[in-house]
Length: 481
Image 1 (tube, rainbow, N blue to C red):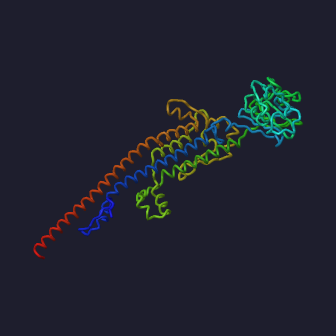
Image 2 (cartoon, one colour):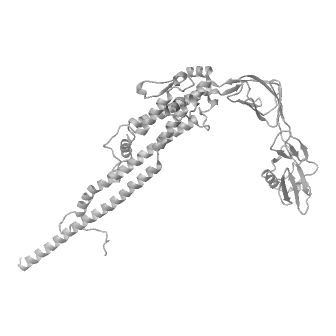
Image 3 (cartoon, rainbow, N blue to C red):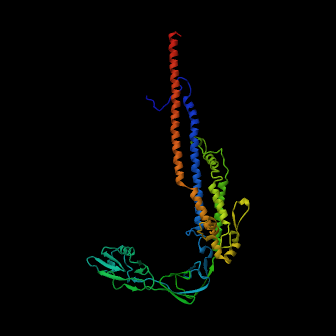
């Protein structure tokens, strides 16, 4: 029976538990590697936390500054937006007003909707859509028929089905939509363009695709009377004086509506700003002041073996605490955000306090409080300067002048950008991780060499003892003992 060459046997001569002794000696050596592995783990945790904070500030920025956000404060419409009232539900009208629309009372009557040009077949109610186009009384030349719709040419074979014909025409660039309706029993071809200039030119090239039963009607413009002035447009959706109309149905009589300042929209967005800012600030303050538990280091694989999942979770909660305690970048961001928010914005005569936003007690660490009634009053009295308080921009190169003239959103944006640039640098983190991983690999190699050395030393000792015992036995035998 062969013995595995990797199997190490010790203590045969000395009677010592060599394996246990080597294991104990190696545990001391391995502690050096464990400390570096723990250092790497803390780096991973810290970088993950930095990435989390970076994502939170990015999400905050997107929510209050991006045009894609419904809570965006970075537009005139957020503060000077208008709302339309008075149109009853189901009236066949959709009317909205932009920030620069004239406020007041209006009337509108829809006399005609815009429509496209239409080409309609005779009664084909009995057709099978998966059957040949022969059902449509086409005249074929050499089993094919060719025609043009506007500038698009088509050639269909006798074997083409009605469904395939509809699909080919609809997917082409003819600018028409062709459908069969079971309700009317007709095939209709309608232009995507509406209005009296909508084009639907049919030209039979070879054979006859459309027999004389097909009839054509021309497009029509939308006609409405707004404040006693007749308005004609080629589309059912149009804008006049920053009021946007979408006509859905004719009306029997004039309808009255009003354009009013939408103060509640601005209040909702500012309330969201305050809530999101407070949430972000609270999280960052928590991380900045978390206690450090120096006795709780990242667990090694050996330590995890005898611990329950709950124990591991509780241990790591302590070990992760305080990773960003007194972090300079995070502390600087908080300081810049707080100082930037409460400075006056040049040219507006306003700051946050002017519109009802204040801070609480010292213990609240900068949390904002909103007086909604004071905000409503400011929006009613001076919406332009409330808007500038948030949205005004400055390109001044001098730092003090730039800070003074910049609105609150620019100040926050520049603070966040500066923080993200210095706080989260994946390339530097990756380089550090490569460096420390190489260090761990090298230390493990030295650890293996150290273990081999211990085994060689114990083996040499066993060999020396064996030699000594052998010489002693020989001596005793020669003496007859």
